[in-house]
Amino acid sequence: MKTKITKVVALFTTLAIIFSCTEDMEYRDTAVSPVNQLYEPISGKSVELVASATASLFFEWEAAKAEDSGSPLYEIVFDKEGGNFSNPLYKVLSDNNGARNYATISHKTLNKIGAAAGLNSGETGTIIWTVIASRGLSTAMSNVSHKLTITRMLGFAEVPSQLFLTGEATEGGSDISQAVPCSSPEQETFEIFTRLKGGKSYKLVDKTNDNANYFYIDGNRIVEGEGETTVEKDGIYRITMDFSIASVSIQEVKSVGVFFCPSNKVIFELSYKGNGIFEGEGKVTFKQESWGKDQRYKLLMSYSDKDMYWGTLNDVDSSPNGAGQEDSYYFIKEYGINEGSEPQWNHKWKFDNQFDGSMTKVTVKFNGANYTHFVSLGDGVSPEEPETTPKNLFLTGEASEGGNDISKAMQYNKLGEGIFEIFTRLQGGKTYKMASSQEADAKFFYIEDGEIKSGDGITTVEKDGIYRIKVDFSNKSVITKEIKSMGLWHCWDRNVLLDLPYIGNGVFEGTGTISPSNNSNNDNRYKLLMVYADDSELIWGTKNDTDVVPGANPDPSYFYIMETNDNAEAGQWERKWKFNDGIIGNNTKVRVIFTGENYTHSIEPVN
Image 1 (spheres, rainbow, N blue to C red):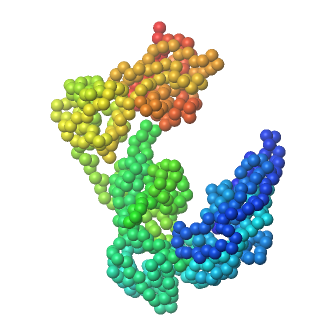
Image 2 (image 1 turned 60 degrees about the vertical axis):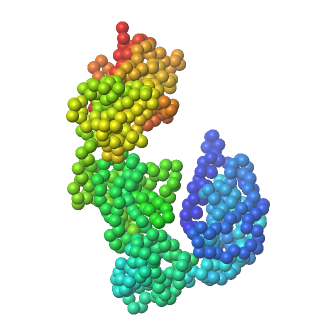
Image 3 (image 1 turned 45 degrees about the vertical axis):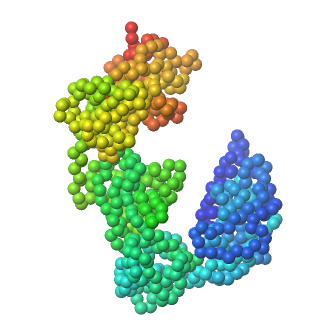
């Protein structure tokens, strides 16, 4: 704990030094005032510490002042009664990594401080605390200190170096030599994921022989002795035992599954195999996006009362690249279901390319020094695609550009197996449906509540408009977006120089003079801007990231386009094209084509 706090303080000190430098990089120290008043807890307060993960004590003090009007950092320091903080027992950063003039300190941490002060388990004693304020290299200790009387929890003076479960309720039965080992995720704490039989008993031992010391669980506490514990029903349980505070947490694990981030759901479940191992297999199909295939995943564990993610311990952002089963790439850590700004995408791994479209086995191991997982090709045969998944897809009906004549149905672009997209005009108040071909014997599909249905149903369009429709038969999903405008976007001026109206069959086209502003020096860089009806913007840029003019006889791939996921401001210079000489200041026709294997565009002068 002290090591972690020291590292955080060092980081903030370094940042403070950087921002305390003048423009000519001459460092000037910044004075900081000491804290003059301590508010909470009041001096002499008594607290009986309890064995609960949520139990804490609130500390607060007057804010210090820095000479440069910046925000000081704070540490609470603890010492024995009668000490002077020259060699403190413990230091704790205030909340928000030291930025707040208050701190929430857990009872477990206070229990450790009591132990450092020489208090035995269950013993009551007094410690003192004060606050150190800092800014850059300057520190100031408060001249005020408060007394705090604590009663330590009834933990164990001697914590076992290892722990096992034994008894008729356990996977190893009553034979102590077959006792099931626990992991030790942190000092003085043991944990196990295991199957227990309802109505049967189990106990804890520190050895797997006749010399073992025995413990048992009583409610939420660990007790030394030869008592026994039972669970109400058969199940898979996660049991966490903290000997420093003699506390226990027992959670029933209802399920573990592979969570596929692009689909925002579990794509297959993992069965419990014993010894803390979950394993299962299912077909993995990467999601085709305009920029490539999305292969991100993590794990979802459902307890009886909540869901939690298990994601990467090391926050990797790459495929395994040949990492072996024991590689730290696969190490896992638990995260809250709503943790972070984008919980769907945080703390994920990426499947290796070999698993796309294949039966895939995922093995998760909650045992050993590091919880981990591994991915391998499955033993089963990949299931056949549903018969209703078409090889090609067409749009037909009175709302469509081709009308009710199925031979004139508009063809979707195929992005991947079972994934199709179309840019088209639809008439409001009229209907359309999807077909597997332009023949009379075509199979039909329709959209209901945002999901693809098979059959002769129809979909009604709310209003006239140009629409981008993407359907994915792998998860039966449909995304429909109305397009408000399309235009040629000038990188220097950061605005549209030429509007491109929709002319039909997935094509946007406009003709006019390309006239950048006077201060642009005739900069020739451009991209394409699509604006949806909700005013969100999407930049379309070069698929090949070229940085040259096309020349007289360009390769067709020069004009291929892809969506960049950048808005117009954020993507000002990336993935742009360049005009040929003779375009700027002259009448020009620009055409954008959203059909075929590659979306593309053309730009040429008009006489």
